[in-house]
Image 1 (cartoon, rainbow, N blue to C red):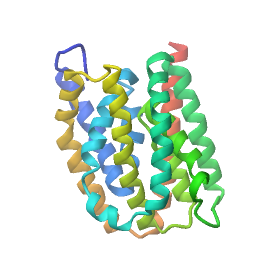
Image 2 (cartoon, rainbow, N blue to C red):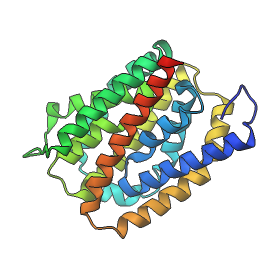
Image 3 (cartoon, helix red, strand yellow):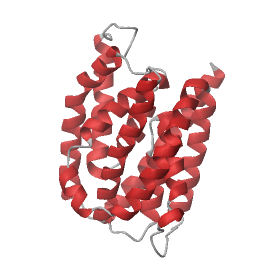
Amino acid sequence: MIAGAALPPAALLGTGFAMVFLAGLIRGFTGFGFSIAAVPLLSLVMPPAEAVPIVLLLQLCVSLNGLGEATRLCDWGSIRMLALGAAVATPVGIWGLAQLPATPVRLVIAAIVLAAVLLLGRGLRLAALPRGAGVLPFGMLSGLFNGLAGMPGPPVIAFYLASPLGTGAARASMIVFFLATSVFGLVPLALLRMLSWPIALAALLGFPAVWFGSWLGALLYRRSPEGHYRVVALTLLTVTALLAATRALLDLVA
């Protein structure tokens, strides 16, 4: 979508709109899926160093959709510890994004996400919601994912899907948490001068598609049986891992 300071060709721009609309639709339904879908999709047409800041900017804006209700339903205790861990680890991930080759990063992320899906698919459940220091590792891993790939979701999604929280509270908690991780990711990117006017313009152009997709997804969530939520979440995690792995393998054979 970005080539220096120039606007992208019309076909590529249309592809980008479709990608972020789909990601917004997923986010509206699940409360978490935007960056998980958008980063792998946009990485098919641009380098991660461009896709990640665009996605973080869009995620920050779209997180305002439904935020009021989410703050009333969420579990603030777990959010605080997850956010603390993510705040500490996100700058480390940002450094890795700037220094590490993209292919190994994609493969590692794919492997971790697939492992989480296998555990959750086998029925992994926590008897009680962890508190205090027990939550920090999930937040720190989320921060690393956030910095490296703009995808803070998988560790936190696994945490909440395995928790005894109800679907509404888990979804609301993720909406609030991912608003915070967007800020955590954008500040180091700005300090490292990885944000630019072309990136900001690309995010601005994509925002209407993301907002409409998020609104439509939230409408579908309200009209769907609660049991569908976990199935959609696990399916999304699986697709995320496969997309990341496919892109990495294509890079290896290219």
